[in-house]
Length: 165
Ligand code: RP5
Image (tube, rainbow, N blue to C red):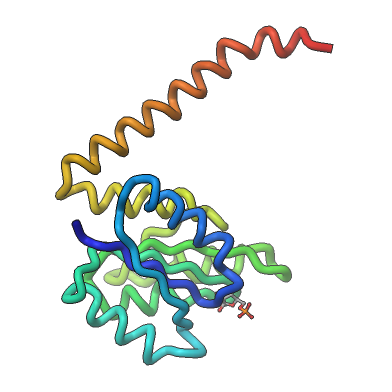
């Protein structure tokens, strides 16, 4: 199975990234995590992206906050699909990172999830790996079914909860 590359701009992004790696672990998808910054360690980020395909990666998740150029910088140096997670920071509450990540020029796409949406990034990465792995696709389908059943159980209970005082 191909690996997921999980790159964060700073270790301060770790709580968000952990939501993605927890999903990958629960699906049995291998990953490798690094701290590379588009601005502070651009050469390392570039080298990782350029070699990622040859090094057994199938998709890359890139999480960054503020002027979040990490996902775009990675995408510029690989043809692997790149998933961007815009991370919330104090001043603009993640809008800065969201726009920096999502508004890529034509030709270099970044599949951008919501602000701090690490879980969705993990699921999307697993779905991409599952394109060539039927067992993984089945595991993802089963977990989605379990999620649906949890919502159905809430539906059944909601009338009773509305009567609670
Ligand atoms: C970004 O700047 C990082 O991705 C992080 O979200 C933000 C702040 O970084 P630190 O100052 O916490 O290292 O590059």
